Image (cartoon, rainbow, N blue to C red; front, side):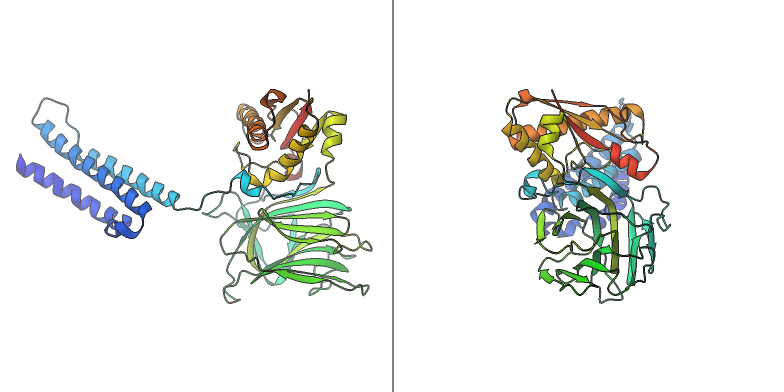
Length: 425
């Protein structure tokens, strides 16, 4: 019996040699987090030995034996789960809603352009875009969703068709800067808002595109510059903010006539009161230089008059409250919108409101209904816990995909249907 037991324990140890090497248990003292994880690993390994020993004993007893191979397999699975947990624990924490407490950005009232590249096949060039460089739709192991990987170099990538931008609008996009191997591993790229009489001609004014433009360059630091072909003096400036490779950021741009503000995540980087010319109508957005991945691009017009919509008209439709796909947790960049809605409710203490979530038609009806209800409840809870609104004044519900405001036949219309409504009771 002892010979059999010793043999099986030796077999067990050999199976763990490679796994222990992967976990690097010999370096336990590197930091406290790894210490705690490795202690748990040791516990699971000891349990595995116990299981093997018990299995051997049971062979000679009356109990149903536990196969030693199964004990080994189960223990390896537990240790691998612990390794995954350790790696997850070492990731930086996601920002909370309160970290955005100074974020005053409010998304436009009506979405006029949207692209998250989910309608494209991985490896294809997206149909709503054009380029003098190159690019393709990709996925990444770091972040969910599909991304447009731009490798512009000296080229440019623009919308395939012009987009008529009014006096007031917002532009939002996610970005994952990439190291450019041809440019000393820098993460440089630029984003431009352009006025051009030749929107289909990307080469028109290649270095200084169009007839007028504002350019935000994300390089060693973040800078801006403007120019106008009518000889209006241009502006320029910089900020020490630098975007790092392989990290996801959200860039938000808010234009109100001549004024333009640019945010990176929750930080306002620029607030320029006279950067946009009254003499030009802007109609194109463009990315150029460097290498980067972009996603979730949304352009919306108009600044929502929340007080009038909610108090006078009785219903406010918001596109400025954000969730990850199929999730009900309110994302922190929703802070500016929620703060403004909370202010309206605080100024009108007699008003009661129902918060109603809506989805597009992707997915099963029942799942969409459940998701919309959970999202409505999450927004209600944020208004209560984060902004002090009396719970007695708020209700929540969800309608799933049952009340679309547009046909669910393209990305833009689906973006219009994904919304949160505030209904005066």
